[in-house]
Length: 283
Image 1: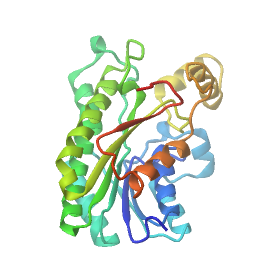
Image 2 (image 1 turned 90 degrees about the vertical axis):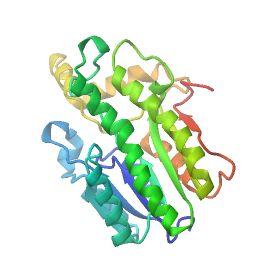
Image 3 (image 1 turned 180 degrees about the horizontal axis):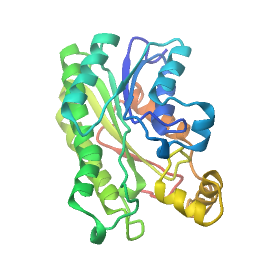
Image 4 (image 1 turned 45 degrees about the vertical axis):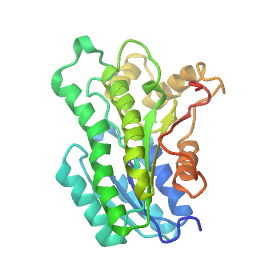
């Protein structure tokens, strides 16, 4: 198998329909042992289907990886805290033997979703930047040091968004700006790390059918007399109208591109942020 003997770390893998979970399972099916990490989700951020399934977040994902015959490690980690990131990488090397692939998939939204600059507080801005920019930088730093010590190269993949390359409405400034910064961090790291045979690329995902739960959306669903699931289906159908392919994407479709970037196939590709969005951004 492509990744036999390799170890991957995937952040942001809590959700049952998350991109992180899909990537973790795709790499495991290709032979990798996988460490998955995220913060725990409070009850109000758990989707109805997750609640019905008794979903346990990264523990459930680790169990799925093991069911595929691979070794797994589940570690809670707050990416705004350097000591927790350092402990995550150390635990992965100690338990699984190495870090060969890092997928920075975790992301932070606003507690008050959709804020523009006029209404944003500095702590809210700083939280988004800490998780979405500093977090991937710090995780990449510790993972890259582990890769360099092992002396066999590696792969780092940053998951961004199409919103980092275009203006979407008048709100959500912090999230879009943080992901635009992540795109450029991808380029800078690619140049710095390629002498060590560590190839860094990114994915700018479009509208993806994940199991995210946003409190603002829950309130809107209640106001419209809809269940949250009904609200999300209507929201996704509406967003699909702006996608040239005429539909939203699935986490597994992003995972296939992550698999490609982590593999031996792209031998002459570094510093790229590939659009996986059904044609929303073409460049």
